[in-house]
Image 1 (tube, protein in one colour):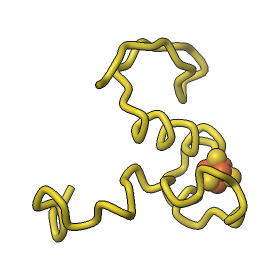
Image 2 (cartoon, protein in one colour; image 1 turned 60 degrees about the vertical axis):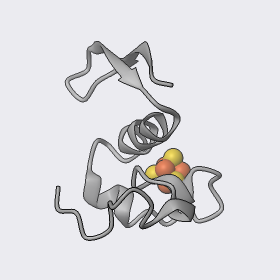
Image 3 (tube, helix red, strand yellow; image 1 turned 90 degrees about the vertical axis):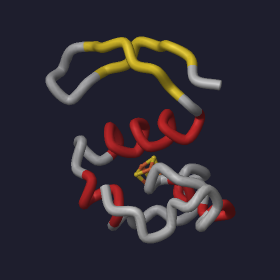
Image 4 (cartoon, protein in one colour; image 1 turned 60 degrees about the horizontal axis):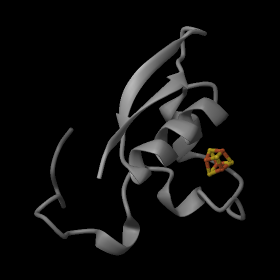
Length: 72
Ligand code: SF4
C-alpha cells in the first residue's frame, strides 16, 4: 500500500520516498518538530489529530506482527 511521493527533507531540499500512511504521519511530525525525534516524542499537542500515531506506529496494533520488544 506504499506509494512514491516527493517531500521536503531536513536538508531543505526535496526527496522522493515510498510512503505508507503511518510513515507519512511520522514524517509530518518530524517536519513539524524541526526533524527532532525527541521533540516528536515529547509533543505537547495531544489534540492534534496525528498525535496518537506520531511514533510511526499504530497504537491499536501494538504487539501485532511480533513487533513488541523489537529493537531498532
Ligand atoms: S502530533 Fe505533534 S508533532 Fe505531530 S504534527 Fe501534531 S503537533 Fe506536530
